[in-house]
Amino acid sequence: MSQKQNTPTAGQVENELAFRGYSTANLAKQLDLKPASIRTAVWRHGHFYGIKPIKLGEGQGARLVWPAAEVDALLQRGAA
Image (cartoon, rainbow, N blue to C red; front, side, top):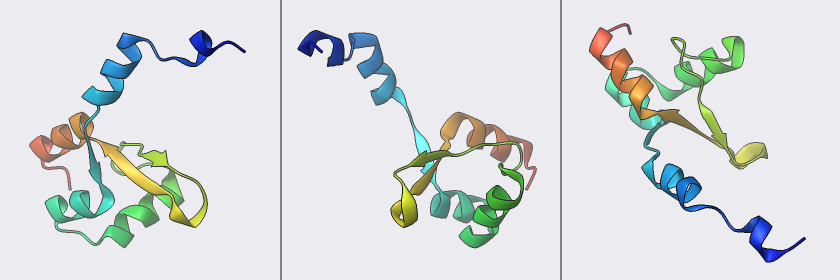
């Protein structure tokens, strides 16, 4: 494999830097819920109010990051 194949393009780097998300704790605080309630919903249903988190890492140290655009839309609707 050459070095050139592993180097991200400018567009890929820009997309990575443009991503904004909420932690589970921040999402829970915004919705006045316990973080465990959100994690339980994801465990049972695979989503929380239709929002699927992005899993960072593997195993017990994994974290969930919630896409900010979708969370902001949920907060605007006042669904929770």
